[in-house]
Image 1: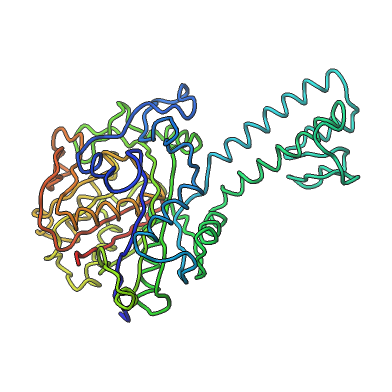
Image 2: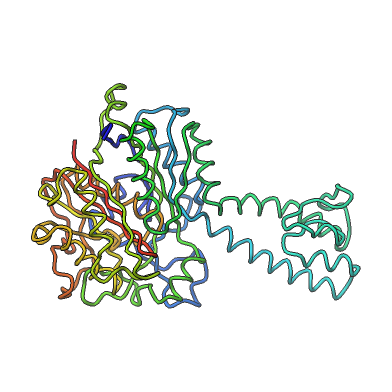
Length: 455
């Protein structure tokens, strides 16, 4: 490698709150964050539980993804001692803000229902046709030719200046502008650009959307760029906030825990629960860190990525992809047998298929060493953070490494014969660590592995 990769700053938010102290109170204490969520009506679903921040002025639901990413990015830069305007790449793992999509279609449906009621009372046929068009905010048939059109044939319609359908169309202009601004946050690349502009960062910008490995893939790509001498500094971030669009999809796939508890690696596990997570980390070349006199928090000494292409939603039963990614990361770290590893932060979703496959994958990658290395799943406390899982669990793994405390697998009940490793059940554990591994997997057979080293 042309250069070593160091971590010099981070910002993190979960359902437990902001910063490392919140993680210590929740994740490292083994306290689950799950409670009935009030962000949307959970009546149609099998569970109401999620690892979502509570209501209130500090509640995560009041951030939205864009401001949450901005805050975490700013905190990471501040911790690293880097000013706004730094020449740094921005690599973001995200699916976009699905809340804005759900809101848009609900508002469109409501507007359609209102317009249908107006049709029964007044308005011309031309006006009625126009109002029925999704995204329409003007008058006349021609103005519906493009979704999201915000003018009129005359070019001037203002809220409150007309009556009937025309007045309603004028009011819709302001509403559509607000909806368009929200919808922009549903575009992953827009969020990356917004984060870079807000922090004044002038390097390349890349967005990763490969599901639950997205932010881990962003970190891996940044490490490659830094190690290859192409960039000196990168801000890698990821985010997911619990919302109805994805909640409904996981519910329909019967992936959510039936009893409101996540029990990774336990024989009686019934599924996962979703959780809030947003984080950003600053990565630098070791030379750049030394040159400016900064203190590294940790080093990233190995990384790997692999696909197994077994199934669209299930891992390979033998964990082939995770084993391959782990072997790559360990070889790059100069430790193919994992002799220096002291901890593994597992993907550990608490689903029937993942946990057994992941256990077999770790055994395949680490051999007999797998039996003596503590493994835990922090999703037992945070929930599954989807695109943010990689970067948030990267931060958790780094804290475990630097503070010498292993976060437990909470809610562990009884062993599953298919899951026969040391899962740090229920209580944190002191450990003197030199290196730790964090692994993630995603739909479609994507797998990532990162090895961190204490300074």
